[in-house]
Length: 319
Image (tube, rainbow, N blue to C red):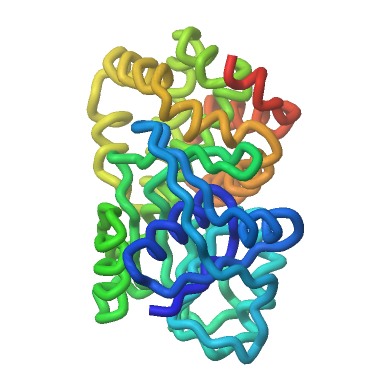
């Protein structure tokens, strides 16, 4: 399969390397110094769980022309960068499948300029940070690589994509309503990032039980507000964790999670310049929740913090 990975950050680098290693024909779209580095040194990865380092050589391109042909374009840019990518994807009508691996609570409304039959929604199964030329990453066992067609069908191309990702070592789940999944998952993501911004990082958040209690209440409000709009809550573990478990247990579980390596790579990595993606995601979700009959006072207060707090530098977030 000929695959173009559009975006050479953490997500794009890990998927590109692992797909290339199992025999897929992978090209990475990168520009500037990142393109220079990839051509000279390849994709350099370090698995934060094992410490294992790998280097994978891939083809590097700097543009997607209207006449370029690939079987799949795997889009791994941030949500706040998507507006500059969509016209380029729309101009190319040769690629039959555009797989978007990113936060997207707006659903298909985001892709109005694209042929909807080309769009596949997804979500990556990892987090990490790039330091220089090396990508430090960790896979998320709780969140498999998610894939779903816009109309919910399990199509032959969806099965083929799932098989390719499984071959590359990823756990895959096919979801019949990816846009609902992304919307629900965004509530948790933006709440945790906002609370981490409030306290100065995930380590500090883990030590502040009062803030974690506030976080749990905020996420609970958001999920109930979303459900009141008729949105099915998925993934199921979010409903169980925030709506079924007693609050004290959810607080303990979250504090435990925030003390792990996962929090540094999955949370603190978003507190710098990447915060603009989370802010855009939060704006889209809160706009939807304003029409809900259930109020979200705690979540709204957290979103004010998210909007007003300046980005944190990486050293202060990791302390």
